[in-house]
Amino acid sequence: MKRHGGFTIVELVTAIVLLGVVAAIGLPRLMGSGGTGALVFGDQVSSALRHAHKTAVARRRLVCATLAGNAVTLRIRQQAGMPAAGAAPCTLAADPAGTGYDITGSGSGIVSGRGGFADAASIALYFHPDGTVSKDVAGMAPVARSDEIRIMEAGAVRRTIRIEGSTGHVR
Image 1: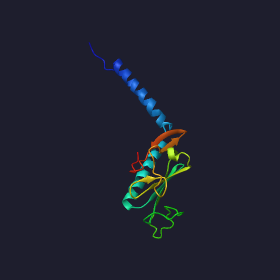
Image 2: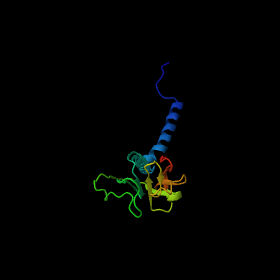
Image 3: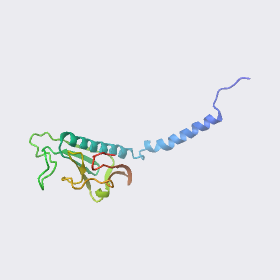
Image 4: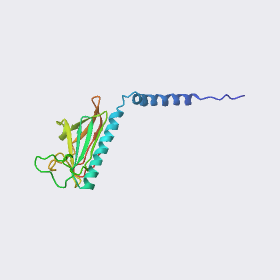
């Protein structure tokens, strides 16, 4: 008796189930409803905050991070020490040597806050040379565990970023 090549019913059912799973997970992402833009923007925000922390410690300067809408701006204070009362902490225009930098990135997500950031239209973080992170220039209002930076898209939270105020660790 001659045997004909083909698939068994178990193999066919397994292949159909796998295709169904791949279609259920993959198609929404390919169609753009998976929120990948907000996830990528969340990665950019957390990377920028890590960069701000490393720069503050390495250069021994105050670094200001501003998150507003869908943009992140980092500025470094060029002068050593704390700014005078009423002075802008991280302005680059006052830098006579022109050695400052200003990084601005944007994405499809929207930044919002929770905890101590909830009522603000923008979030300002200050990375100090000693590695701490605060919500004010003087360092008197450290970032708390309950403070969150949330990346929103289409009214839903797509990514949550937390910063440890005492160490500057970004999660």
